[in-house]
Length: 254
Image (cartoon, rainbow, N blue to C red; front, side, top):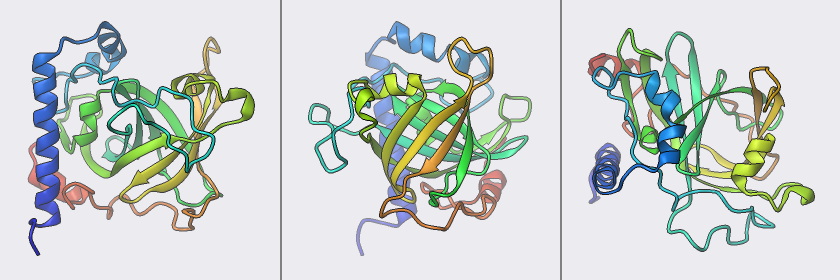
């Protein structure tokens, strides 16, 4: 069959993304709001030591900023060329965990999910918010060097697009970003491994509470639900390169 192997196609896809990001960063000035939103992310990293991306300007053309449609089948974005993205990375740092990220208003809103997302609606996965990451981070796979923040190995376990699902009637006038700020969002994932509806709900903390925020990531009970839970993170393979954590750690400097 033509077209090359899955690994080569994925490598080309990542290369196209990186070239597009570099072109955008060279031709467009950084928006002040993007710089402010990534201050925490950039302040924790030394980009002369880590291959993690510093991040370019926000891309408002890919955002789930508008209100959700009334049903999953309705057109949910007729004004932008692409749906916003999501990515799930496995991060073997001081503690092994999954990082769940949704593209919202030009950045990746991020949560650390110790047990990883599940396909079983009965599983309630703890999700702890972390700093916003740049959009370019969804392609990051490699080893963060010792001494750097988050030192350890990262693979891209799953990635794809998503769109908002309708919420409760009284909240339907809110944008996706506003619903996130209020502490509850529902969305439909179209990934290589994760599919169907999911919900993120804040159950502790929030604006002016003084407590650290805690959320729950739960699979919706739809026709894409299952009982597989989450695979063994040590045996799981990257959706981009097909490698395991151990293979990435052995092949890349860090």
